[in-house]
Each structure stands twice: as structure tokens, then as C-alpha cells.
Length: 87
Image 1 (cartoon, rainbow, N blue to C red):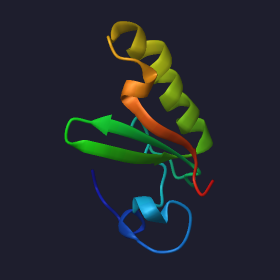
Image 2 (image 1 turned 135 degrees about the horizontal axis):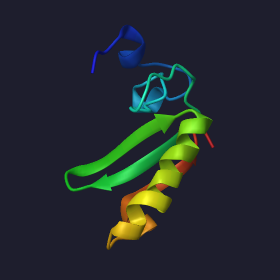
Image 3 (image 1 turned 180 degrees about the horizontal axis):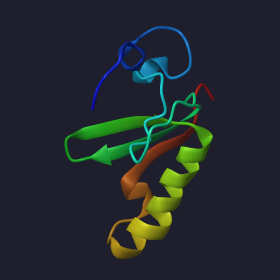
């Protein structure tokens, strides 16, 4: 992944606590402002990703409709927290 100054900017604004000012959708380029987050529980700790509304919904839908039917885990075992940034 190529990082830009916008990716590493820390400070005030939406997503500042996550250290990323762009939607973290990795299937294509998205320059929409992230307004939602998904925190996952990984083997080496928790990981928070920020998304625009469209990609937030697609991320959760993919988890529920594609991954979970084939997985022994449940939603709570994959997602620690999710919702609107700053809420």
C-alpha cells in the first residue's frame, strides 16, 4: 500500500483517533470521508478500520452474508465494536 500524507496525518477531525483520514476500503480506491468504524478482534490484538457509509455497510454485509455462514464463529466473535465515529 502506498501511504500519502493524508493517510498519516494525526490531529483533529473525523477519524483522528484512528490515524487515517480516508475510507479504508481495500477493494478499490475510495476517497470519501470515513464516518463509521469497525473494530475487529484479531489474534494479535484489536484492529480498528474506518469506512465511508457505503463501504461500512458493505463490510458488515460481507461478514454476515459471505463469511459467517462458512465460519464456526459468530458476529460478536469477529466484531468487537462498530458504529458512527464520534458517537
